[in-house]
Length: 35
Image (cartoon, rainbow, N blue to C red; front, top):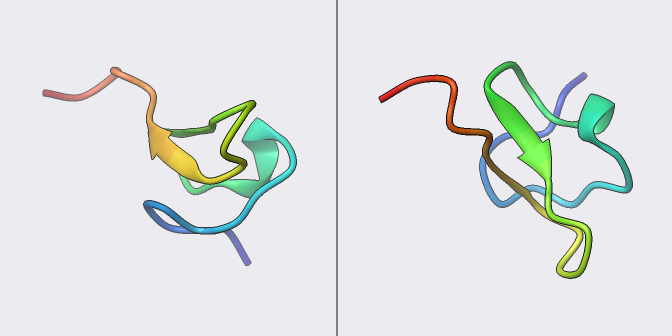
C-alpha cells in the first residue's frame, strides 16, 4: 500500500505514483511529473 500526499515515508518507493519522499521531513510530496 502506497502513501498519499504528506503521508509518512522513508524512501520514494513508499509513496504513490507521482509522489516522492521528502528527505528531511519524511513525507510524500509531488515529484513534479504532473501539472
